[in-house]
Image 1: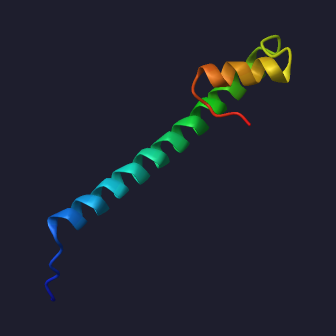
Image 2: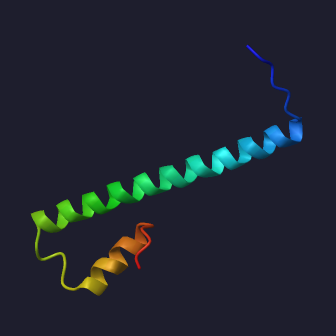
Length: 67
């Protein structure tokens, strides 16, 4: 097996980039769960959702990015 020598600065840069990617993935997965739970709430109680604007506002309050 070959040995690879990486400077501390480059290793810290790669590690920092990796941590950012992990946070992005976690955020994406969390938003998906929030939306799934909201859809379940709406299906269980159809009076919750009066308009698309209200749904968007509800999701934004919970940290979901709505376009």
